[in-house]
Structure formats: structure tokens, C-alpha cells
Image 1: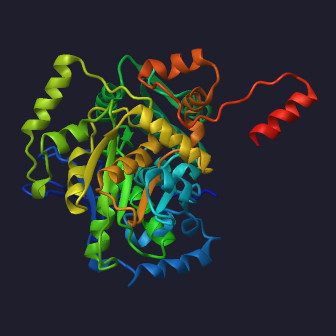
Image 2 (image 1 turned 120 degrees about the vertical axis):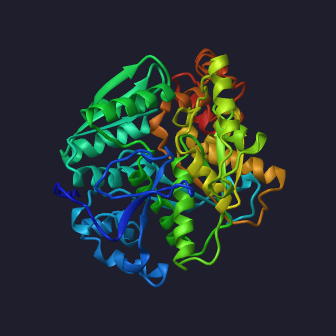
Length: 475
């Protein structure tokens, strides 16, 4: 199910515009312009709306009527079903491949592992998207905007999921050529295989994601290529809808906590913007708290927010601790290093937007080890929802916050699972393996010392009686 817009030379509208998030600047730009930062001050931009001119429903439950229009590609999409809350493009001009058919699942077995009361922990499983990760929510919005601008090439830097999503949208719609930048040895085969299979031009540079991000921004600006990384404000508009679907699944009741992995911080930034707008519009009466979970090997947000006290402060961010920490990483050659490759990022481009979300949602930041991530991942998998390692950081983080008493056992908690298990099967197999050499090479070398929740295969002779005895013993 594919719907595409036709290129248009002008997107001028009185409804949508781009605005600098720096309150001392607050410059505005037409949606027909492509900016990855404010030309005046360098801060990131929001897509903003004159809500008085928008056809916003009186209540969120009005969106339930859209389910009756599922023959319409726009309303079938779990992103564009909520078009009235991201109306930067006309409905007839949006791009969709059926993204957003995702699931919020009550997960009592995982809840018990975390320390929650029965019925209180839910998993928002974004691995059901066409490319297998949450990125499709934002990519359909970014490609919609790119197509409206008449772009013929789109680029990204990626640890894997963004490249897979961009490549899918470009190949499925045939609207433009995908160009992806990856770091050397910093992408799983499950993700790289998608980008290659979908026909993207893949550029591997010597360096990590942060290095690739610097280069792709330079290349995009010099060659006039549309950049789809989450510095692009239209990407985050699509990612807002993950929270709309969470509310929809909870019968429009706001949970107490949203827990999300933190890498480039696009999701946390988008979620904060979603709740800010819903509160402004009077569509919710309270806001959930937000927890952003870093991997301990890529914990810039944790370091800055929890240890150095960096805050949004109404938009007046103290930049000195940020500069000092970046200089510290440069001087000591510190690179992100975690098995959770999707969040293996040291310089999150959405840092300031995330700080804004944390302030609005009374948020907290925590870090968890690769050991904790893989143990949580195994429990998620045992509950029937296999996820990639980065996804499980949300569950490991919820367990930590529960242990600290920050989250109460009676709180309603939603952990976002950002990507499918098959995005990184090597880690999964190594965790559950009986081969200690494979375990040590893949996981032990990265600080994982045990597999507490492993589901190991059993070795038996090729004899019927022995096989029957084994099954009776273990099943």
C-alpha cells in the first residue's frame, strides 16, 4: 500500500512553519525550506503550527473514527491516521508504505522481572514496522517533505536502522536515491543487509557514527542532498505518533511513565513535543514522566544531565559543561562502545530538544550496562516480543528505576521497544549459545560475564529414547 505525493515548487502555508527552539532567537522559516539547524543561531528547529487554523478534533477519541477508513492509505497508516496533529502536508500528498501498524502489549512476565504489579507494565513494540524499527514513523514524514521539495537524493548517517528505513522508502516509492553513511565495523549485518538489498548507495567511512554524522551533514549541504537524520524536524513529526498510538491503546488514558532508549535522542525529543502539543490543545489533562536510558558505553546524556546538571532551563542551556565534556572525549579519544549498536552514539544531535522534553515531562536519565540490557532482552524475548539489544535498554532502565524506588510498582509504565530482534541476531544467538568460545568472542570481550536467562540448546545422541528422555526432563 503505497501513496506518494507529486513534487511541488512551493509549500507556503499559513498553517505550518519551522521555528527555532532557541527562545532568544525564535526565528521562523517556511516549510518549503530545508534546514537542519537555524541559520541565525545554530539551534535545532521545530515544525510548528497555527493550531487555530487546524482541524484538530475536540477529543483524542475522535481519531477512532479513522479506523473505519482503513481502505484509505492515509488512514491505514499508523502515522497519517493522526494527520490532524502533524498537518504540514496535505493528506493527498503524503508518502506511506503502511507504517505504524504496531502493538502495545501488556507484559506481566516482563513486569514481574522489572518489579511491577500485574497489569502495569506495557511494551510498545515498534519492531512491527515495515523495516523492522521505529524509524519508519519518522521516515515517512521526512520523505513526504523531501518529495514535496522535489528532492532526488536523500542521505543519512546510520548505526543501521535509519539506513534500512531510508533505503526501504526510496526503493518502495522510487521517488529518490538513498545514500547512507556508516562507520567502519559499526553496523549489524541484519541492518546492513536491508540497506544493500533495497539498493541504497552505501558509503563506509573510517570512524564511528559521530564521524559519519559530521560528514553526511557536510556532504548534504555541499551537494544539496536531502538529509533525513533526526536533525531534520520533519522526521520527529512522524515519531510523535508513537505516543498517539500508545494513548490510543490505553483508551486515551495517560500512563505514569514512558521509558525509552537514548541514542541520538530523536524519540525522546519527539515524545516530549507530542505531549507539549497535546497539553496545549487540551487533549490531555496530565503528562507522563519520561525516562531516557543510555547504555553505559554511550552515556553522554546521563553524564550531562545527571552528573553535570545540564538542564533546558527554559531554553537557556548552559553550554559550557557540554563543550567541556565533548573536549574531554576528544582529548582522551573516547568512542561510544556498547553491544546496543542502535544507541552507540556519543554526540546526540537532539540533545537540546531532549533536555526540553525532560524538563516538560519531569524526566530522569539513567545508564545500564550491556549485561543488564541483554538480561532484560532475554526476558522480553521469553515473553514473545523479540527485540534488538538497544530496545531492551528501556526494560533494563525501568527495572533500575523500580529498584531505586523512582517508579512505584503500581505505576502504569510503557517501555518502548524500538527495533525487531532480527536486526541483530548475532548478539541473541551468542547470549543463548552453549559454545563458550562464541559467547566469549561476541559478548565476553564486551564485559558480559554471564547469561542468567539463557535458553540454551540441549545436546543429545541421535537416539529416540534419549531424545524422548530429554523432552520429558526439560519440557
